[in-house]
Image (tube, rainbow, N blue to C red; front, side):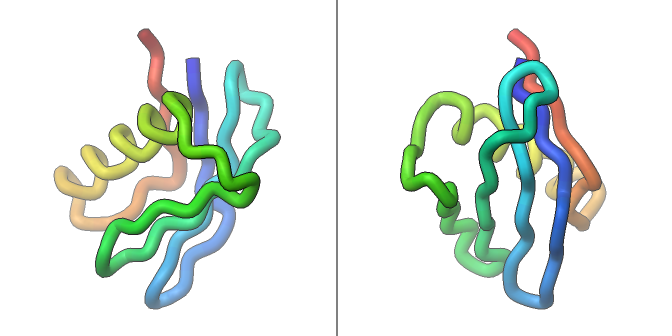
Length: 73
């Protein structure tokens, strides 16, 4: 399970802490206009893809970035 929580939002970006099993040990930044995703540690892996997919799905439904997201397979 990958869990993320929003920690900051500006007019141009949003930042989430995320990790496996609610261990928020990684951070990623999403550009609101381009959806360019930048993990702070530089690793773009399955965990990043999973949590960004959930964030984007919630954004499409609500029109805003969610306070958190969970991906469980």
